[in-house]
Length: 212
Image 1 (cartoon, rainbow, N blue to C red):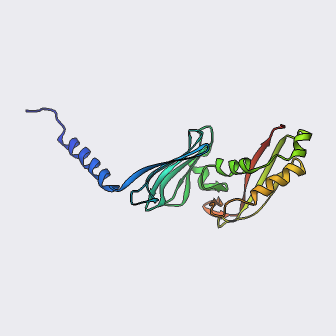
Image 2: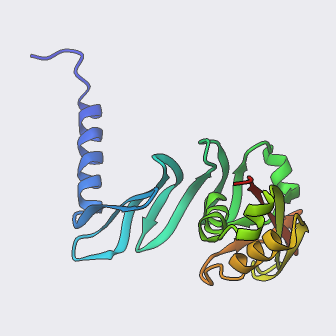
Image 3: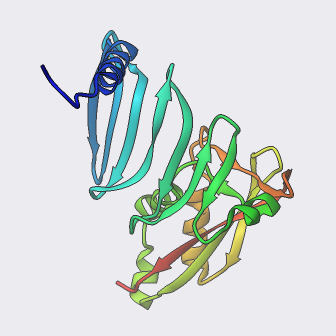
């Protein structure tokens, strides 16, 4: 006869395992590599285009996005990270609100949140860097420094304009604008908020140029 054996615990553990098994009986893990990016997620076996379960996006083997899909839609809390692995912010797709942000207390978020890219901030930054062509004339002049791109985001989360918050040189300035105008149309943006109300705002992207 066994003594001190927790049958209630065994029952709970068995039930949890069975629930997990039956919740996604037709799921399969998918791993995709695209240059420095790696995506790991679960999808339906009979249609791998439909995500169902956990999802993680890596850049150079460092996680930059983490969350879950239900019925091929993002659900629950998602975490978005910078390249150094620091949590930039956490977003709840249920309430459609920012629930955590680096350097901000909960009370701060209730008063104000900035415009955000709905994903890792590395995505729009790397899009610009990877699609830019360093002009030959700029190379000859050994131009280097900072260009800051400002994106105008409406209270409805629409990208409706852009300008250079900080300029460097016409050659590099125009190249940044050229690439920015080709941002994918399906990208999503979060409007700034003030005391829980959406408002117009700006999203800044800083690009560093090093002389070649």
